Length: 315
Length: 315
Image (cartoon, rainbow over all chains, first blue to last red; front, side, top):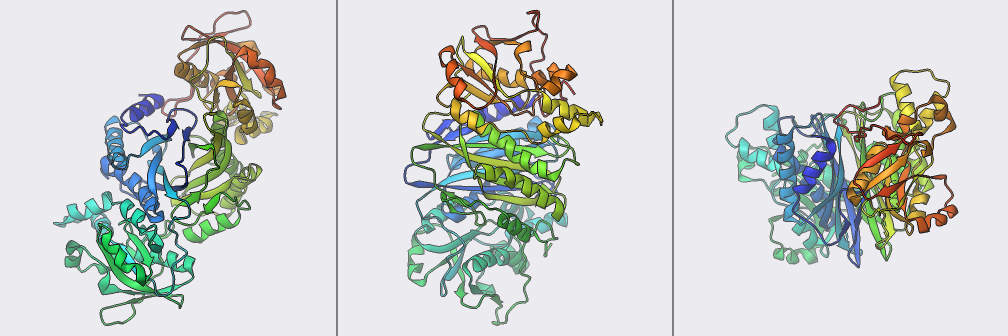
C-alpha cells in the first residue's frame, strides 16, 4: 500500500462530515468556517514512542489517547472541539496496527463530532502529533492567569491512577488491578463538558498533564499568586488509596483531569456540573505552593513535575 | 536548560504580536479571532531527519524550510498566512542549534507577520511538525478539483533545482553550483502573493512538493481530467539547463512552486502578477497525463512522484 492509498483508506473510514468544513482533507489545506461570534481555540501535542509510551502500547488506545490529550487542552480553555489534524510518523506501514490506531482515534472523534480535516503520513521513528481546533464564545476562554487571592482550588475526578499505571508498566508488575490503572493511563477522559460549564464560573483552569504540583504551579506563576493544598483532600480512586500511593497524585501527570480556581461565591454553582469535583485548597497572596499533610505539616516538594528533558521525579 | 525554560526562550525571541491573537502561546491553547467574512485555511507538514533532510542540514535553513513548506500549502489554497504552531522533537537540547533553527523559522514568519501561537517540545528522534493557519475570503479558496477541459496549465518560477540539489547531496558531489542548488532546496519560496492573486483567476492549484508529474496528477484525478504537457516548455533555471537534468523538473519535488490551471480568457490577466509564470500544457478530456518531448513524442513516465514509503524514482 502506498502513502496516498493509506491516506485515502484512513479518510474513507471517517464517518463524520461537518457542515462547517468547506474543503475537506485531501487538498493542500482544509477550509473551515468559524461560527459567528465564536473564537478559535487551537492546541497541539506530540506523543513519541519511547518517551511518552512503550512500543507495545495497544494501537487502539494510542489513537484514542493521541486525540484525548489534545481535547484535554481544549477542555482546559473551555472550548468545544470541532476539527483535528493528525501527523503520523511510522517506521513502516503495518495495516493491522494502523487500522486499530485509526479506529481508536475515530472512536473518540465521533463522540464529539470532530472531523479529521488534514494531516500527513511520514516515514521515521513512531511519533504522533495531533492538532485540535475548537470554538469558544468571544472572551470566555479560561486561562491560567486570573486566579485571585481567596479563590478555591478544585480538581475533577481522581488523580494519580495513570501515573501509577505507568509505574506498574515500568516495573513489569503483575498487579491485580493493573488493567484498571492502565485503562486510566491509556484512555484519559478529556473533561470537555466540565470545561464548557466552567466558562462563566472559573477564574483559571489547566489540565493536569505533568502532575498536580507542576500544573498548579503554572497557574500560580501566571496569576502571580501562591496556594495552600491539603494532601488529604486530594481525590484518589479506591484502587489507588489501597496502594498508599498519594504521591502519584502530586507528581504524576497523565490523568488529564482539570485543576481550576473559583471564587467562593460561585462555589454553589458547581453543583449543576455532572462530574466529581473536589475542593483541594485555596489561592494565597504569598507566591509559593504549600502542601499540608494530615497533621498540617508542609511537605517537602519538588516543584518540577514532568520535564521531557529530565528524568521523571517519581518513577 | 529545562523544557519550560527553552519554550520561554523561544517565545521571547519572537517579535511579532498580532492583534487577532487573544490568548498567546503559553496557555493550554491559543485563542484566535478570525476576521469577519473570512474562512480559515489550515495545513500541516512534518520533516523527519533522515527522511526529509540530512542530519547536517544547517539549523537556520531547517527552521526556514519547516515553515516555508507549510506556507506553500496555504499559497496553493490562495490563503494569507496568519498563525503557526511548531512541534519540535529533539534528541537533546543543543542551545546553539536551537537558536539557529528558531532564527530561521522567525526570519520567514516575520516577513508575513505570522505569530507562533503554540507548539510543543519533546525528546525523541529529530522531527519537526508545523501547522500553518491562514485566511481566505468566503468561497474563494483554490482547490484541486475544478480544472476544466481546455484550461491552460501554468507553473511559477523554475522547476528541478531543489531535486538536483538533493541528488548532489546524496552523491556528496563537489559541483561548482552546489551552493546555488542547495539554496533552492533549503529555502524554497512559498508563492503566497501568487496564490492570493490567483484567487479570482485560477480554476485549480497545487504546490509542487512531490514533483510535477505527481502533483499535476493530483489535480487531474480530483478534477477527473487529463492533460498534455510539453517538456520543452517546462521552465528550468540556466544552471539546471546546463546540466541537462530536465527529469529533475518532472519527478523531483521540493521546489514548492505552484502548478495551476486557468481558462484561456483569463490568461491575459496573469500579466499583472509579479512572478515568472510559464505555460506548460493544457487540460484534456481523456483521463491521462501525456508529456510530449521536443519531437512531439510521448515520454514514458512513472506516475508516482515522491512516496514516503517507497524509494524515490529518480535519485
